[in-house]
Image (cartoon, rainbow, N blue to C red; front, side, top):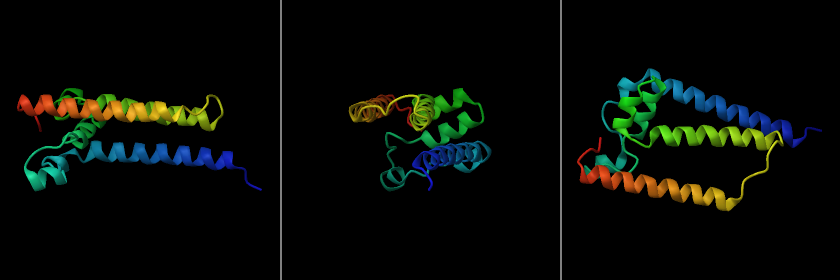
Length: 130
């Protein structure tokens, strides 16, 4: 009988591999993202709070931090947060740490949402949206 632990490890590794592949693909195809593809922008001609995030991530994949910050100043922070969450998940799967409280997760999502909204407001008022 297969235990759940090896399947969880496999899911964790597969998720990391998929994220790394997507990150690498973005870095190689950043030229394809020269124009905004955000549905909100296409429909309203106004950038959404996440506009520029894909292009910023593509720039980070190429090592261009300065340009990434111009596209979206929160991209490096959110990328580090995602990598940290993936590492924490691995530690949980390997039973090195406990699963964090659901309130920690909810608080993080709320804090990220507030940060995105505040960043969008500042960028909108200073006319620095991508």
